[in-house]
Image (cartoon, rainbow, N blue to C red; front, side, top):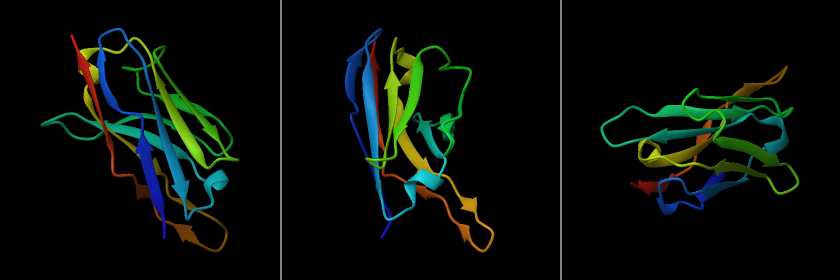
Length: 121
């Protein structure tokens, strides 16, 4: 059974920081790219950033220089360090184990349940 469990969300003042964690089980974590996404009320879900299995990272322009994604394959955990938070960062944050294909199989993507981040101005 695949589980992705986010934690670390909460209420923070503008300019503050939060660190989100996503603990994965039931997947070959080290082989997966892991993504962070967010969804604000009334808005579509958007990509925050993705870290590849090899550690390459891409960020959305809106978070570059403020957010940092990292992973610990020994702990099957991916992190999102969020600094200089703005009210526009208020959203539910989701982690995603991205789909991938090996030579013989295709493995689907999986989503976590999300964690609320609220930034007060």
